[in-house]
Amino acid sequence: MTLEQRPAPLPEASRTVFFVSDGTGITAETFGHSVLTQFDLRFRQVRLPFIDTLDKAYEAVRKINEAAIADGQRPIVFSTLVKTELSEVIQRAHAMHMDLIQTFVAPLEQELGVKSTHTIGRSHNIVDSEEYKNRIEAINFSLAHDDGQSHKNLSSADVILVGVSRSGKTPTSLYLAMQYGIKAANYPLIPDDFERGKLPSALYSFKNKIFGLSITPERLSEIRNERRAGSKYASIENCRYEVNEAEVMMKREGIRWLSSTTKSIEEISTTILQEIKPNRREY
Amino acid sequence: MTLEQRPAPLPEASRTVFFVSDGTGITAETFGHSVLTQFDLRFRQVRLPFIDTLDKAYEAVRKINEAAIADGQRPIVFSTLVKTELSEVIQRAHAMHMDLIQTFVAPLEQELGVKSTHTIGRSHNIVDSEEYKNRIEAINFSLAHDDGQSHKNLSSADVILVGVSRSGKTPTSLYLAMQYGIKAANYPLIPDDFERGKLPSALYSFKNKIFGLSITPERLSEIRNERRAGSKYASIENCRYEVNEAEVMMKREGIRWLSSTTKSIEEISTTILQEIKPNRREY
Image (tube, rainbow over all chains, first blue to last red; front, side):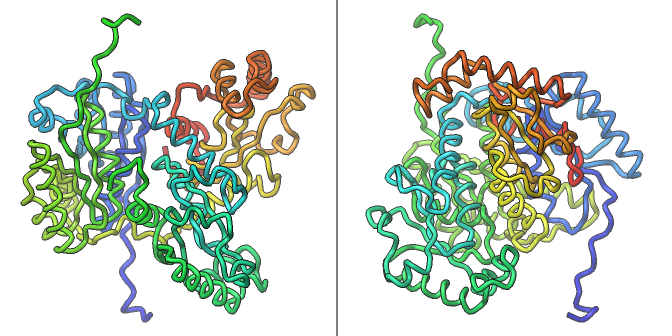
């Protein structure tokens, strides 16, 4: 790449962005990130979670105003505060306000013909819910069924991921469990399987919930070299052999699969859910 | 609880909510959930991810209109579509539209004095970024350092969680890694430690990054009984002993800790980040 072709570096951060929430601030931050990535600018980012009293709200205003003075520009505030009185305090800060709840709750109240409950922390106050218990159970299941560790209870898996070692099965299984409460087992395809020319026998009864991950041999070799530099396991020849054998096997067995090479675990997980359609969710 | 005191059951779902995105739809869904939990109503929820062509947008409109007819009420659509032409197609569906990007991007363009890039999938097109690599590395680190499995490289941990068995260390470590790229080791406090009256010796050099999780003996006994019903390990007497000893030890050693009993892994993780303040993030 010549100098001329290089994209200009992003300007230094001169604006501060605050994520203000009465809960963890995860919603405000997730949403704020997704809007801010639409701008080729850098932002200094500060999360202010658990702002659930007037005192904490005034303290937040102080911090926002300090940043305004330090930056010489008003900060941007993404807030999710369900109590109107807290929201009103934050609005007094010298900032550009993006009030996520108030912006959408009022029109929804009108549409649905009911008042919102304005209950703080409701979306996170979930420890006793079925859904939360399912998530924790799914995390434990996915850990116990990582890397073909256990054949037990495969019948209660929602998804069984297969693929060569280091193709992305473990992070994907954990993400499916953590985000969606999906019990995701994962099973490596290893040279023994390729020599036998068959899937691991424990898997045959569950073909409808198997999903494969593949990866380019080049990327696989890179990843494996980080772990075991210079090994046969990491060599490009061996990676080519394993990836090819695994893809041939998945095609022959009619297993749906995708290449994880350029996909994030979020994208892989979303695609798997679309394809496997576990009972408990609608897509 | 008498019949009169019971909260009225939520009405049956009669509205459909769609989360429409050119990416995974995770942002739209996270945000939509947090707004919808403010209403005591049930909704049928459908995610339509990867809507990144006109054809797919028309197909989405068809699905939304079908739901409108089936429900006899117009659906609610939370959308994050960065391309104006896709967003315009979706707007034609008979629905109440909550267009998250368009609502906030236009005012931000004005505030920042630059145009947004309108680049699809930008927030998820992150596989090559440092941040994404850190997350994957952190997941691997947290798995390798689960339950005191390895003393190696504890110096590169951002956080070391301690607590009695089943106090919530593992899901919290994995969440910190997955969501924030935080390398979180976890270390059980076991009866041997209590008898010796000392923290595991591997931990002494890292006291500034240790964080403790505790839990009520009653809840701990419940959780342990799900695993090993009727065991001494799960008995309320033993749980009382272990929890008490662990709390005494954490206080004596000056370790910050919280009770995980009524907190979600998101809330626990947010609190830990506020307390430990790992270098790479600002709070």
